Each structure stands twice: as structure tokens, then as C-alpha cells.
Amino acid sequence: MKIHIKNGRLIDPANGIDRPADVFVAAGKIAAIGQMPDGFHANKVIDAAGCVVCPGLVDLSVRLREPGLEYKATLESEMLAAAAGGVTSLAIPPDTDPPLDEPGLVEMLKFRAKNLPGPRVYPVGALTQKLEGSTLTEMAELTEAGCIAFSHADAPFADTQILLRALDYAATFDYPVWLRPQDAFLARGGVAHDGPVASRLGLPGIPALAETVAIATVLALARESGVRLHLARLSTREGVDMVRAAKQQGIKVSCDVSANHLHLSEMDLTRFDSNLHFLPPARSLRDRDALINGLKDGTIDAICSDHAPVDDDEKQLPFGESSPGASGVELLLPLTLKWAAENQVPLAQALACVTRKPAQILGVANGHLGVGAHADICVFDPEASFTVTPKTLKSLGNNTPFLGLELPGVVKATVIDGHVDYEVY
Image (cartoon, rainbow, N blue to C red; front, side, top):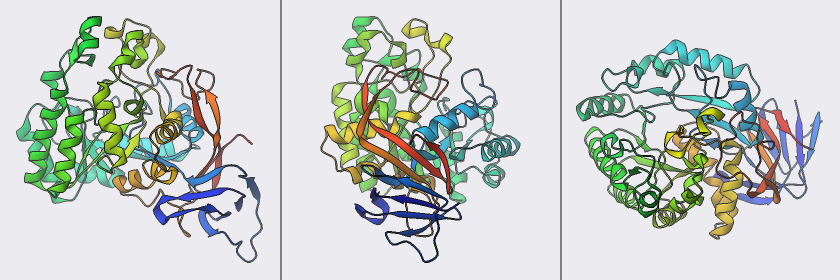
């Protein structure tokens, strides 16, 4: 299919473009920018007047809930939700049921996703078998099956000797390792940030120390092993400072932050809304401000949605008994735009945090619109807004703490591999 996207403001952070320009797509690739190629006859024209045309979003943490957890969501529903949010590439954590610890499971997931409309899917393989932290997986075979990195998701990893062995092995073959830093013992039983609000509400806390102790450990192991380390979903001021220092010391480390943590803090818990129960928890205002500033100065590399749809029955419980998780893949762009507007961040810089930079962490040639690149494109109206309701979300999980909030940015079209997978014109 040949597509002509006209009259839009093209923002491509990877190539330093921010100007009005038409985009021409042919054979799944960007055929030209600005000037129509000779002999080009569009099968479809998208009028992007008043809209921004940018690379499709790249999300580093989207739980599609397959295999094994289809009662929470399905591959079909969450792929549609991602496309509706302008997301064209996404990474899947390995904590499915069973975990992504065998090549056959990864190949099945890739096959299912490839045969559905929606984003490119990049599985993250389990670092140990069944995520039990005792026996390493066959990382080479999982890589051949399609895994782009290895992780332990939210599963605890108590034996640091085994973790070091895993990092040593990954470093030998230059496999990236993604870890969410949390000391399982310090966080045990906690459901909220360990601070005055949790104490007042009678909620067991997760101290900031649970994150910083884990970061100190994995940074020391990363320095020893030389592994390419990615720290997922930082949540504390001290954690940001530690990553900043590690980068200055030359440790190969990157990190991301959940969009939830750029806007929420422990102060929001006064509503006792179980939609605010997620991991890591929303922390203090001081921590939230440090995350915002760390993203602005480049210490934090990317924003992810940390999309985790949860069954209604598991959320309609008292806060401490509910299952953690929040839907967010459709809100990644609006929450990024809101963060940028509130903190005077240029739009191109904000979009880089959800396009070019996460694509670099994934190690894939997406997240830009250079001629010859994959035609993965998001067209959105930055001036339009919408109110978040269960009816506006395509995800089967409408468990978001932003219900009822008006957010900026409405996706008008999502093009993936040269096909229009979502359109509201």
C-alpha cells in the first residue's frame, strides 16, 4: 500500500526534524519526506492538518497477558489498545503463565502476534527457569526464538551468586539484562510507599531502601560482569542519583520510568483507590520531582506505560488485598504530553523518550522516520483532549488511576509496517 500523509507537523527526534512536511510510504517503508517521489500514486491519503506526525511509540513494558492469563486480557484486545495509543513496538515482560523460559513459548507468542493487526512484539526472556531464581535459562536458544533481552520481571532474586552467574553469561554474549530493582525482603508484604500517608491509612509500606539496596547490588554486579544493564521503572530520588553516578563512572546502564510515577505520588492514596496499587508504588512528592528532573536531564532514558491489565474482581477489593497493576498503553502518549506541558519540555524532547530512546534500549531499528525506515507512524492531534473512561479504553483492563481525568493528545491514525492499523478520521 502507498500512503500519503499530508499537511502535518513532522517531528522525528532521531533525525532532528521538526517542521511541516509530507510523508510518503511505499512497500512498508518511508519512501520520501517532503517531496513526492516520481511516479508515486497513493492508495490512501491521510490529512494530518493540525496534527503531529511522529515515529510510532516504542513501549518497554506491556503485559499482553498471554499465554495463561487470558481472563485478564487477550492478545487481540491489548494489541488493539496499543495501536489506539499510537504504540507500534512493544516489549513483553516474561512473567506470563508459564513464564517465557522456553523457545517454544516465545515462538508461539511471536507467531500469534505476527498474525494479528497491531504493534511489533518483542519478548523479553526469563533469566531463570520458571522465574524461580535457581537455574539459568538457555539464553542462546531464547535469543534465536526472538527474545531481545532477559529479565526476572517482578519475581524476587535472592541468590546474588546466581544473579552474578546470569549476568556473566549474558555479558559473554552481549545479551542485555533488564531488572526491576527491589529487595524482596525489605519490600515483603508492602503495598504502598513507606511514608506518612501509608502509616496514616494503615497500609504496609515498601521503603525507598528496597529500591536503593537493590540498585547498589546490581550496579556492583554489572560493574564486575560488564553486562549491558537496564533498570526498569525507577521510583526514588536516591535511585536516580545512583544511576546518574553510575553513568558518569562508565557503567553500561540505562533506565526507564513509568508514566504513572511522573504524575502520581503517595498523596493520591487518600482515595483508597485500588487502581493506585501498582509496583513499584507511587512514592513521595520529593521522589516524583526527582523522576521528572531525571527524565529532563537525560539520567532517565525512557518513559514506559508499565501496562498491566487486571481482572475487575481482583481490583474490586480493599487496597491491600487487590492485585497490583494498572492499564496504561493507551495513555502513554497523553501522559507524556501532559508531563512535557507541565514541565516546559520541548515536544521533540518528550517524544524522544517514547520513540528513539526506547528503540535504542530495545536494540531495534525503529523509532525514527528516516527514508528507508520501517513505516511505523503515529499521527495525533496535540490540541485535542479526551476524558479517560472505561468506554474510551480499548484494553480489557480499565484499571487506571486516571479515570475521569481529561488528558491531551488524541491519536488519529497509527501506521504499522505500512498498514493503517488504527484510524479515527
